Every structure is written in C-alpha cells, then in structure tokens.
Figure 1: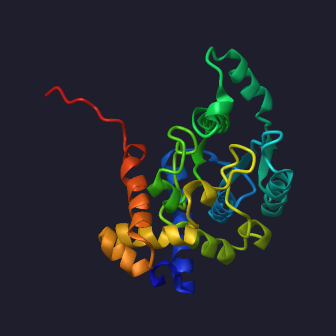
Figure 2 (figure 1 turned 30 degrees about the horizontal axis):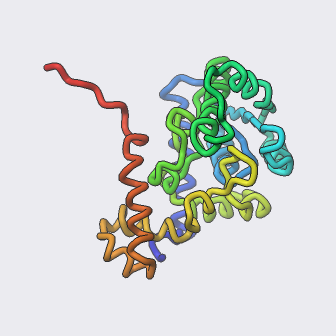
Length: 265
C-alpha cells in the first residue's frame, strides 16, 4: 500500500530524526553510550547502524543458544559489528538457561515451549543487556518495530524491556526500506524473521500471516482508523483475517501500557 512506501526524502528525514533521537536520549540520561542486543537479523542491525550514525558509543551483546541459534546468524552479527567498528561480546545462554531449568521447581518446559520458557529466554537476554548497561553507564536500545509492538509480538519485560525504541514507529516493511537506505547487507535484509526462541521458529508462521499483509491491515486500522469491513475491502483480505489481527492488537494493549495504579484519592 502506498502509505507504507517511503520516498528517499522520507528515508532521509527518518534517518536524521532517529539519529538525533538516539543522541538526545543518551545525552538526557547522562549516559556514556548505548547497548544493543545483536541477533544477526534486520531489526538489530538497523538499530546498530543508526546508533553508530548517531556518533555515540555502541556496545553489542550477542546471546546465542546452542541448538537453537543458527550459527550463521552469529557470524552475520559479528561481521556487521566489525564492519561498523563497534565493540561487542558473545555470551552463550546455555548454562544460564540450564540453571533455571534445573532450579525451578515446576518443570515441563517442553510442553510449554511457546509460552513461559520462551519468555524466560527473552527476559534472560534483557537481564544481561541491563547488566551490561549498568556496568557501562549506558542505555538499552530496543529493536522492536511498530508491527511487533502493535501485535504484542514481544515478551513483556523481555525484549519489551528497553530504554528507547528507535524503530518503534516504523512498520516491518518500512524497516526493510530503511535497512537498504542505511546499507545493511542484503544477506541480512532477506533473512526469514525469527525471534530465535526455539528451533525452527519464524515470526510469520507463528503469527499466521506475512508481514507485508499484516502491515497493510495495521496501516488501515491504526493510521486510517478504518473499520474491519473497510480494512478487508481495502486490503482484499477476508474479514476473519482482519479480525484476527485486530484481536491481537486489542488483547496486547497491556504490554504497551504501564501497570495500572490504584488511585486512593
């Protein structure tokens, strides 16, 4: 859809505004720099490049898991970090996750792979990112995009636990356009999106729809404020598909809001 397509002028403006946003956020926090979780995927690569372009100190943390993380993703993340000339460290999650698995009194994680155990992994990454940020007096830059945030496709207090979301205002299809603009390698841009929480997991298979189609629906619902019927007509998709996406947006609202506080006055 035309609203999702960015012109060179749009991309130049977005690039400039995000760079300034990162620079200002670090300055306001009186921080020394930014910490980013690098996965070898498009979102973290774009955020790393934007932070580097903002001329701030950037530290990348790679957190692979043996048997789950594709070794090529680690290689791509390291190669791009080297190209950007940013410092990074690799911390394997295996021993940490094994300790949690063996210590926690209620097991059966294999039966709950899509739920609690995947969230443990995301929150472990968050813990390591913030430990690094605390030691380096930095802030944590999140890699979530508007599509994921709108759907609630992130772990509360996991990959959703960050200080700043540089690409949080861009749909996934727009992040791809920005990635090309800032020079992210095509090999990374063309990868199948995955959160890397279990073997063989892909975002689009889990959600049940291609990102391009999801973004078309979200653009109609959120930007144009169209109804389900109007969105279905505009996108050419079944109403049931639009309702499914709208339900995800509605039911994940709690992830995008601060916890409710009881007012006693």
